Length: 256
Image 1 (tube, rainbow, N blue to C red):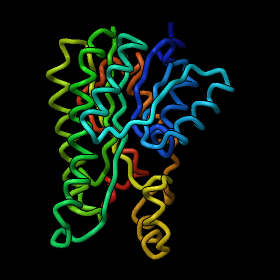
Image 2 (cartoon, rainbow, N blue to C red):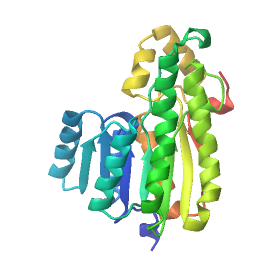
Image 3 (cartoon, rainbow, N blue to C red):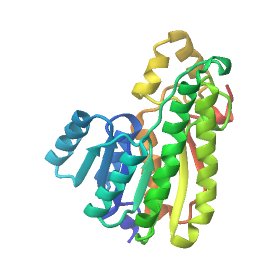
Image 4 (tube, rainbow, N blue to C red):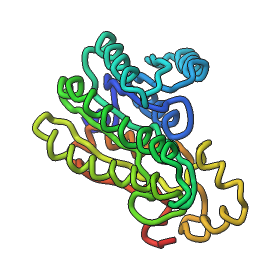
């Protein structure tokens, strides 16, 4: 009984952006804990490479190349999930993007790209997943947000807005969906060694300033964020909902 509380045996997880960074690490974490995973990403080759690698290790995986920023693609995704599983236990909203500029410099299409990718698609993923999640005896949603949604950092206002919105969505759904047995939480990473972050951290002066303000004195590894995501999906976290957990090396209690 104790061991099962810390496992995800038989749990079915849908992970967006599952071929790299935090999404990939989360998929691997859930697989190693006994779950089945369906990954989504825009690039078919990347999806197939990940699936082939995991299948060779004996994991239960599937996935498809889908652009979840498009409503028609999201509809197709839920049809595929319904056909395959007829239910869902875990949704991890991980897809995100950013364009770093000063607020007055954003063009309308740049703003829309960030909001559509980070916020609108996540909201629609939650809506579309609800009928499947309510079939589970322990549904769980984890939204990957950011410390940028909790305090000012140099990511740009639209990105911060989108992540702050997901934090509030997390709180609202945690209350709305509690009667259906669905828990909803968020994980807010600080700088993590992902393709999106590494573009910025190539600036050695900026990297130095980040490390100086991070009490643990280093950048996070994707697996360290993934471990918290996986925990929030476990039976061991069955009384945790509506929370946003910062995985930030102490940054939020130190300030920027």
